[in-house]
Length: 404
Image (cartoon, rainbow, N blue to C red; front, side, top):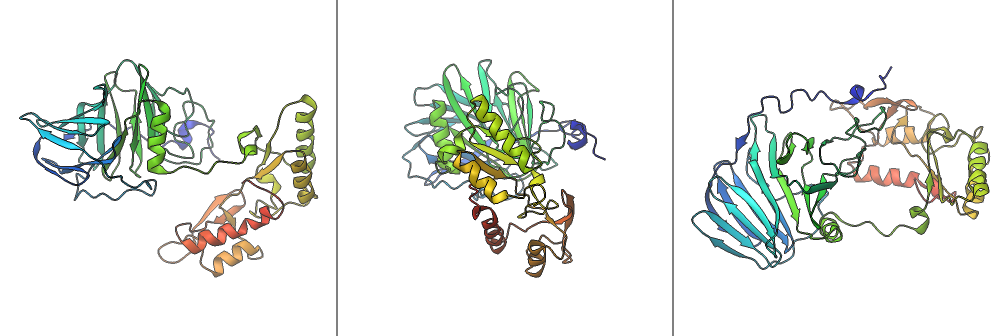
């Protein structure tokens, strides 16, 4: 039985930062100007400063091997040709475009970023760029008393995340979605900082478990990951709209959704039968409340088998979808990737025959317990599996369903 509390699903974090020894990046040894930025040799590795655009700069270093410029799959934006200049003094290196000025202090290495009006955007904190013997990577930034932090993806609580510690680690959360429950279903390690009317953004491109700590200090904040490279981008802004344009240039933009998708969507766990769904739609209509979509949770399925309908609960499923759509209401069903182990169930039997499910190294199918009970999981890393899974959705689209 699952303990219905946040502690039931949170990993033990008691060891984190307990006596952590921060190993500094050290001092600048030398640097080399390259086509899109500079490469800086330090006491701990090669730090790359790369201009993606005149208003976007990337910093990347690998403390445990050779620094490489490959990115996660989140990054799809292509570098633009950027005009920049580099100056060197006894104490620092200056790299600048028409929108950014980046000062790199040499001893120790310390980064300050300014905009074209000489306003400070972001500056390294006391610990700066660091790592640990456990192969963790850290970046500390100064926190101004006027800083407000927004973003970080799917998190509960207040919009301004100052004073919180936020974990990037996807989990299937049984506990209540309250401020004490941190890691939820998706991780977006991007945030924007607003300070006295100006805004900048940072995206931490690291796929390891990571933590943004805006709580432990009033003078600096940090982001860290349990492994990999320290790899982050700074977006110059200076408005929230410009930061979002810069961030989405890097990570991509979704197509404009249909108008109904921006309307009011009604969802809960769970509407258990057709009668309940139709009564719900009628209640909205009688009260004059606009309604664009009703979500169906797990009870519309036959024994929780995905791509099926329970005909006892929803005897007129197709007609119901059509009738509601004619009244401006779309049906949006849940589609779970857990496929029930049932040799007579076509989705399962086909997935087994074509070896489309995740397997152990020895070749046995990996099973887990989800809503249908013992279930297999499609191996979405393989393109044929993704195509096959996508084709299964004709089950829904053929009824007129437009969202899942």
